[in-house]
Image 1 (cartoon, helix red, strand yellow):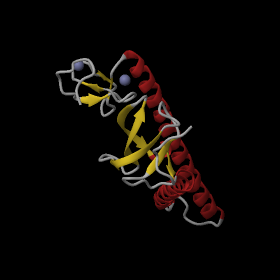
Image 2 (cartoon, rainbow, N blue to C red; image 1 turned 60 degrees about the vertical axis):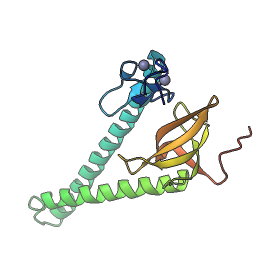
Image 3 (cartoon, rainbow, N blue to C red; image 1 turned 180 degrees about the vertical axis):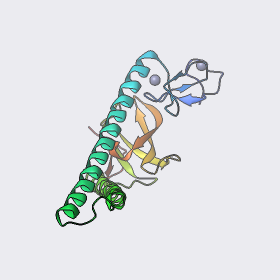
Length: 184
Ligand SMILES: [Zn+2]
Ligand SMILES: [Zn+2]
């Protein structure tokens, strides 16, 4: 793929929003490991998407910490009420609570992804994009992402152009029927 602006140059990256190929000179950097945008418009949309994802991640982290702390306090209070050495057990209680919370969050997220989205996804799966700028478009999983176990690379056609994009499990739903032909 070549740069959309310089047809003679090999593209160094793809726009995170629209998938256009861009050379090093034309790509607008979105931040470390966040890819590039091809234009100010695409940059704005891509940044809004990234902000939303960041907010979700932060909320998940806050929930995780609150749950683990509540579990630790509950265990310590229970021990204290029975006259046990609650202070001595605080550290093991905290450790156990963090492990248990991690397991609960992890397994419930995976269960939800399985039940509502059809995850896990594999190469060749037919999928529907359920959020973001490509919402409503159908495509095929090309391969699994190298960096993340819960992200896959999907090939899709937007306005007659073939694009390849990374999608998280939460942005996809598995379809039973092939993506093409699309009749709407
Ligand atoms: Zn773009
Ligand atoms: Zn260029």
